[in-house]
Image (cartoon, rainbow, N blue to C red; front, side):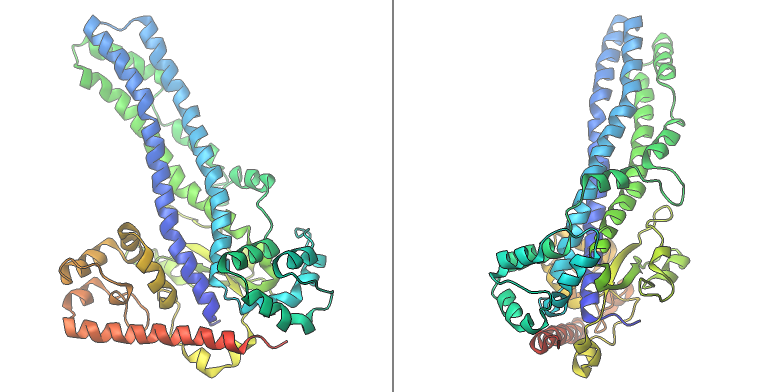
Amino acid sequence: MALSPIDRRIAAQFHQRQIEIVTRVESTGEMIESRNEAPERQILSIARRAVKRGHFTRADQARIVDILTRLPTENNNRIERAFRSAIKWSYDDAIERLVDAIPRIWWRGIMPLLPERKQASKRITRDYNAWLRRYLNVSITHDITDEADVLLAKVDELTDAEYTEMIKQLLFEPLSTETVERLLFSPNPVTGQSWQEHMIGLSKKITEPSAVANSMVTGLTQGETLDQIMKRVDEHIGKLNGSSRRVVRTEGRRLIEMASRETWDDISDLMVGAQIQETLDAVTRPEHADRHGTIYYNDGRQPPLSEMPVLPDQANCRGYSAPVLKTPEEIETNPEVSAAFHNVKHDEIPDPTTYSRWFAKATVEQRKLAVGATRYRTLVDKLGGVTPEWTEFVDKKGKLMSVKALKAEKPAAREVRKGQVNELIQHREKAIIDVATLGFQS
């Protein structure tokens, strides 16, 4: 199935979202490690006094055991708070990206569906009439097809912030506390374990606190220095930090992905299904590369959406999913609009138009994550230290160029290629405007 222009914009938004997810996951791991430095400093203070004294007292040993025994619980509590926050962020961020990717032209297609959606959905409880009255200062009847032009005109008068808020409120339910709790304690479908159970399993591989304390006593007795004695504590806490990072990277990404999919319940009647997107590079598993772009359908086609795997489904998996919406008739039947998008294949970065705008606002670190650090450094060196633009990384089909090709390319050839990419971007922007002008026929 060929993706519509709007679905490509959604795919691009969700690819960009992975940059923020990586940053969030890594910062969570760093936060947990930094918080675990305090207990280590407490033990260091005890050990320093013991070395000065020449021995550990029983009270010293008991205090060390107590600190190390409490540490896993405190550590897990921090992970739980971070995951709870990540779930809420993911749900809200997925909605923001969907609304940002969907142009206002979709409103004409969505508008007639609102009363029926209210009647059919068990999740939707709001009064559409009240919401439309609030945002558009109009009232609707059960059959609003004839009023679509009037309502669309009202929508066009809204500011971007007003429009975004209106669509969010009309289409999506707030994330409930019950849903957060359900996701937070859900088992991983691959391992059958929750993240808490995963941490317990990893903790069993870490030396017992009493053994660490006894080893410190023995070390001091044998004449070890303070650094040598503390090395045991460093190793103990280091293993706990390593286990935490492993869980945060795998389970954190899973919970973020699951929270994102919760938004599908609110727009299921507007979706064809959802597709898997993979990060394609030299370390991507062949079986994961093969499933890149696969769409799972909720309209009776195969494979069904119910069989879409929860991602990540293997260690270091970087796959994610994005919803695929029903294609507007104007996009399917207008040759000029279709021509602007038909050359983009599944193995290429989606929608250079969206990426060009995002790349211009991204930080240097986000840009490196998006194109690859080596590719980014290569082009910076080629440009003599000048910050590169998105169009300098991709070819005329919107595909990222290889490091080898970027190194070999002459300045004149690069300018020609940039011109071709900019022409493609302008063509696609015009296509979206054309669709907005055509509107949706009722």
